[in-house]
Image 1 (cartoon, rainbow, N blue to C red):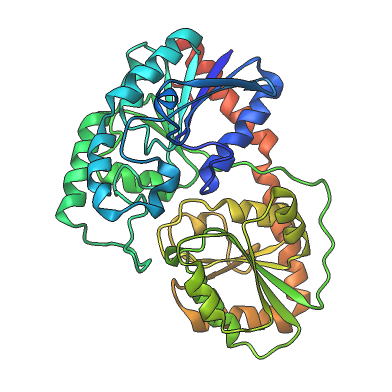
Image 2 (cartoon, rainbow, N blue to C red; image 1 turned 90 degrees about the horizontal axis):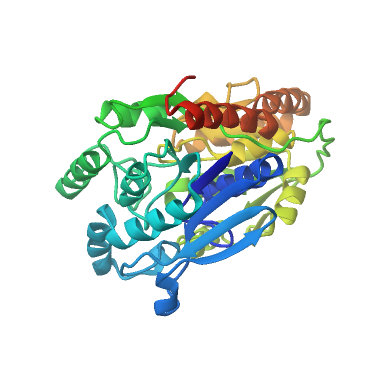
Length: 407
């Protein structure tokens, strides 16, 4: 059957876990299907980029175009803030995206369309799909339908509990445009599904929690414990809580531990200054997938110190797959993955002292660390990418054949 994946970003334009996930499922699906199509964006490169380019790679057809707007999503962080309200206004329903996507779908006529993050493509994507009566699945990776910055948090990184008037208007318009168009809506965490449905989204759509998948090794990865290595992998932004981790780590008086920080982001310089020449802390910047896998294998502990309502961080799945103990903030979808003191540890959001205490306890208790590491690896088996793809294909096949949802 033909399956079309639509995502605002796709390799090499990667910002977060959503783009990585879409690429992985495209690759896995292409091994079993001859009809995998990806529709995505590319930065502006003259008038030619307004029309879709096409390449076929590893049995995947990839269409890219620049949706006519003020800037490309990939460069949003570097864009003058005054442009952003106008960009969002166009992005509610972009007619250019509508016609380009509809024409591609007319040409390919997939059995099912699976949409992901649509910021930059706009919600006209849903209308393009439904105008052709193609069954539609949408996956929630963030809060872009509820919040202009997609994170429900302020610039400080703290959760935004009282939405400004603009955000309330933004949310109301998006609800009216969507109007339960997807046949089924999935999310890797129940938290994200619940927060959307409580705010009036997808009242007539079937919703399903579908955790992400990860490629697994068959055997537990052996670890060394001297030095004990702590890893952070993700965006270097305040909402990710990297400063919480750095402050907790700096307060541990132990020369036999080190902290590897992987990633890039708008607050990188701030975090470098905060590390204050602590020689135990190494910033690796953005690294290749191969190098990241090496760092996972070397690590003993992976920390996810998020301040925002994190959905279902890919880094936790990857830490389990690499026999790492995961320590995460008790917020959003994180506690749906981490069972405290079993496959990892949870701490109060932003609580430096509690995080430091957990790290000290594990540093001084390698037996406990090894026990939880083993449990983490066992937990990862539930999220085997092969099992995840089987679940997705069952949904695709039934919806593609009948146009109805059965889970």
